[in-house]
Image (cartoon, rainbow, N blue to C red):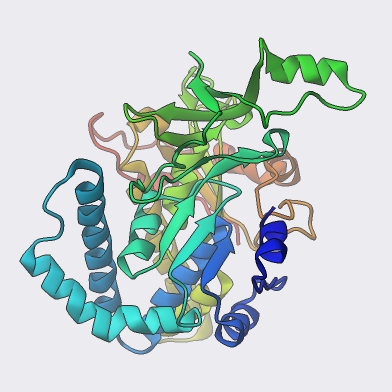
Length: 393
C-alpha cells in the first residue's frame, strides 16, 4: 500500500533489508528519509544504540536524563492535545530546550537529520518508547490492521494522537471487544473468506464480524490498545491466565535484553527465555573492568550478569501481580532469528517453535526451581527470589 502511494505521489522510497547497526546507520545517513517505517523491535534497537553510544562517550547519565525529560515533555503535550491542559511547564520547557541543543539534535542526525514522523506496525509499540521518540521530535504513529482487513483499520487521528494505543477506527470500520477480550472488526475492507477453506472462514467470520485473534481494550474515547494474542495466553497449573506481551515488552526495554519469550503453560509459575543483545553485551562486559585470573573474572562476570538480568526481571514484575510475575528464567546462548525458523520475516516470535526447540531447557529451568525451596516475600511485593536464578551457559 505504501509503495503504491509513493509511486502515485512521485515520492522517493527506500528499502533496507539489512538490520545490522552498520547497514542501518549508513542507509539512514545517505538516504536521509523524512518519514520512517519500522517494526517495534527496530525502534527498540535504535533506542538501545543511542544509549550504548552515549555510555561509550561517558554521557550515559546525560542521555538517561534527556530521555526522561523527552518522555515527560511528550506526555505533557499529549495531555494538552487530548484534554486542553496547559502543556509543558516552564521548567520542563527549559530542560527540553537544553537537551534539544545537546542531545536530541544529535539523535535525529543519526537518523539522517530530516525524520519528523514515523509509522510502526507488526506488533504494539510501548507507550514509553513512543513518548521518547515524540519527545526528541519524531512522532511514531502506531496503527493496526491485518491481511484479512486489506491493510490498516485504525490510525492515530492527526492532532489527537495517544501514545500506547493504535489509534481509533478508520471511517466505515467498526471495532468492538468481545467478553473474552478478543478484538472484533466489521467494515468494507474486511475480506470475504479464505479461498478453498470454508471451515477457517466460518471460524474467522461471525455474524459479519472478523474475529482477529488479538486481545485488546477500547477506552472511553474509542482508542484501541493491543494487549496480546489470544492464542499466546498462558494458563499456569494454578489456573492463572497471563498475557505475555506486556511482560516481554517491559523486559526488552532493558538494554542488555534483546528478546524475551514468556512461558508457563501448565507450569506452577511464569517463566521466561531471554536472549541478550550481542553488541550491548560486549559494551557491558568492557565496562566491568574485572581483575584477577580468567576463571575468577568469568565467575564474577556471570554473577554480575545474573544480578543485572534479575533487576530487569524485577522491573518487569513490578507492573503485574505476584501470581503473574516471572519466577524463573534462562538466558539462551543465541538470539532467535529468521534463519533458524524462530522468527517470522516481520520479526515476530514463532512461540510454538521456540517452545519446541527449547523444551529441554524449559524443563530444566522448572526442575531446578523445584529442587530449591524459594523464599516467599509478602504478597503485595513483586521482587526477584534469588533462589530462582537459573542460567544456561
